[in-house]
Amino acid sequence: MARGDVPGRAMEPGLAGARYNTSSGQPGITYHRPYGYRSESMSQHTRTVGPVLGLMAAMLVLPGPAAAADGPRNQLSIGTYAIGVDYDDYRIPDDDLSGNAISYTHIFERVALRVNLYGTDHDDIPGLDVDGSEILLLGGSNLAGEGFKIYGGGGFFGETWESPSEETDISGLELVGGLGYNWKEVAVDFTVGLRRARDYEDRKSALVGRNVDAGAASSSLTVGIRF
Image (cartoon, rainbow, N blue to C red):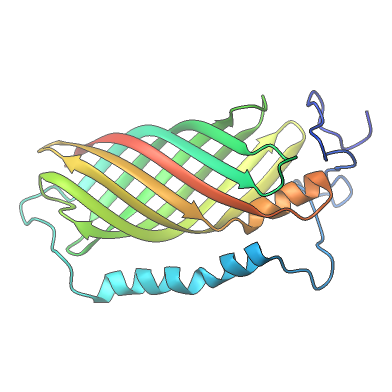
């Protein structure tokens, strides 16, 4: 087995020649795109930065439905969490991960702040784990009152992909949307997110030795207590 190959992992088509960085002294992988390279996917991801920041600012300044005055303003939840990364090359298998999450939400008059901590395992590659966190700013309808609620917003995520032969940090912006139901002391939430995929592309490009475009998403289903 050549130095830098992943032990115990069958080489996927197109992975021959992939190497991990073992000379820099730092964990993780290093990949340099050709000078001047800029894929269409990367351009699209870059153009999402402005709208995300604009949406977050608008939720802070524009009028919106206030939370119910007598509704709980805090929510602590646990549930399931999933990550999916789809690649545009049919020879490269997609990355699908699933696991658990814990979430805390604080509701203000017009918006809510949510922090998620999650841990997932790769569905197809034993020993590859992803642990991460999200901080999200949400705006919506009936966030604190009893009954149905719907919301959307954006924020940031950061996570570490770790296996016996890899430790790669991935982070970026994301857009999220969700819906759920509030009872007096219990709440259920389902949330989906679309992530900026640049770091996922860099990671996979380093593994396969050629440029790869990708799309990334997350989802969670939680149940929590309101207080």
